[in-house]
Length: 123
Image 1 (cartoon, rainbow, N blue to C red):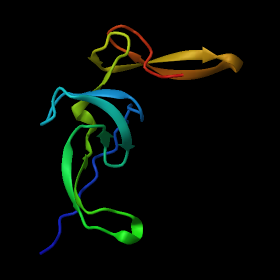
Image 2: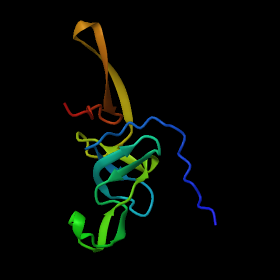
Image 3: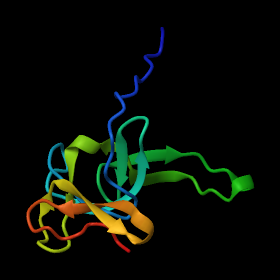
């Protein structure tokens, strides 16, 4: 029996970063908020703290100091199922970009809330 290979999602630009606060807008954990732990650009998935918890059965391995048992851990979810939470208006919002001029004639793009205009990038 052949094992089906997971096909990666078409490459889409993921505008979420590690440590962002996001809200789940669809799926079995709809309504939960959490912190982004990891972003996988190839598969288009993110790992959110305390969202999409699964049980993992692990075997004890004394050589690696691993205790056996059933451990709960997060499972990746699709980026399209979450929205970033704006710290200004405290709501799940879409992301806009503003281009700012910095010293030396260079430009910098910043992520901005579409509702209130507050910046989403932590400095």
